[in-house]
Image (cartoon, rainbow, N blue to C red; front, side, top):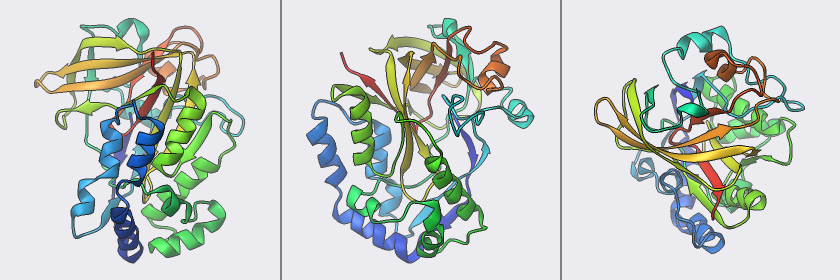
Length: 309
């Protein structure tokens, strides 16, 4: 889960054009989903980005976050991406009261965790693929991007957009991809898992304060491969998607001390031998890479794809 401080900036003229274009084609990404995945229900995280409430407001405001504490789940020591997930002392201190990672033995009914669920703070929507593809998305085109979005390069918004693009340009593997539209996310996920898939996202009744949550139920999903798509802070919906192997995904029912109920998506990693030895998970759980399975839950903006039985 990621914890962000999120300032606000306005799209101004270009945003109005994009929103108007998107509003005129509301069924495009939905139609693509239904054509490719006719038997796969659309998770709430996707629905929210197709018909966000803010698009109905007269003021077109989009929030782009500056990461205060950013824990990247699943980052391994890969070429060009080595040791990115090492935890700093500040991260360890700020998250010491949160249950970010836990052991597989605790993925069971009755386990208690310190969790805080907050509603999505990055108000951005999916653009239909033709519109997303018409907008520059590359470091070399940052001057044009800033100009079109009326963003100052040295502003928080400018630095955040630059960081997202840089992340998407880092050398990776064929199992990684940045999707700038729902159609691209569907194509990537189905190319890795096939079209018999289930898409899931965490759902929470209400926003909560940090409190004890108890696991009231656990359901293991099929398969040992998962595609996870993490929402990145940007002017419109952009997701960093990656395929991970040697994993088990779960649907986890939770109930908070205040009675709030949540249906979370979780995953356990059974091979962490390639993870950064200084990864937050190892420091928090006081274990070494590759010794025991490590688990975590996903936030409401993450989309998890698994094979369907």
